[in-house]
Amino acid sequence: MTTRPEPKRSRPDPHLGAIVRERRQLINLAYRLLGSLAEAEDAVQETYTRWYALSEAQRATIASPGAWLSTVASRVCLDVLGSARARRERYVGQWLPEPLPEPAEWSRGGTADPADRVTLDESVSMAFLVVLEAMTPAERVAFVLHDVFRYSFAEVAEVVGRTPAACRQLASSARRRLRGGPPDAAFPPARQAAVVRDFKRAWEAGDIGALIGLLDPDATATGDGGGLVTAAPRPVVGGEQIARFFAGLGVRTAEVTLLERTVNGQPGLVAQRDGVTVAVYAFHVVGERITRIWAVLNPEKIRPWLG
Image (cartoon, rainbow, N blue to C red; front, side, top):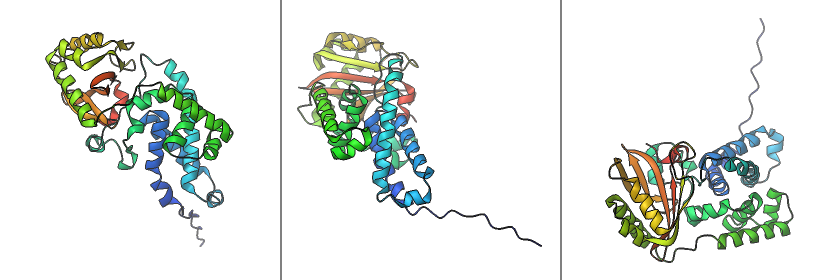
């Protein structure tokens, strides 16, 4: 009688606890680099795939698994950004970043693990993310890693494959683009929320005059339907034009309910039909006037809001 040898069991990964704890940090990093939660999740998954593709001996030589994962995730995001520029040129209509709810709202839909929640601060406001979209991939990575996550330029250089001096220039160029974006809000979130609330009431009432009073004369409204739902193909420019556009949407007759919600850490609105979210609206308010409205209607981008 012969006995079969037991299959060889691989030893447990001694770094398992450390790399699991890094997941939220990686999601936060990837979302800021890509502006898309779905792409961020894919990038993090690819990062973990590369970790487990290493041999045990190779993993044993890595002094800081967290730093290794962050570096690899950043490189994956840099590659994604390069290909994303071409994809977004073919995108139907206007492309906007994916809006995120506050943690309590996120958990309602049951679509995300708590470890995947993005920390909401000024670096994920819709205004900030939209300006990041205007940067080159290398500028965006250098800026986010250095200015937001406090990487040294030597560390950034390892990610983008350039010298530290070149990375310093990339971050400087990115800052100039940021200064050319929407100006910072000059008053507390409570006042911003009051302006958004007044906009909601005027929209529900179809009061064009009140809407015009709340909008900056040079305001811009941008919608993203992704070709899956109807959205304005180009930005609507001008306070009066935007007021008439929103009044024409007729929320009162379309059985749509508007709810005040936090969108990417800022006061915003959510439109629901039969209890299902159909649009998420982010606002930029300056001097008690709305200067920017971003409307995300693409159902693939509002997954955390569904349910």
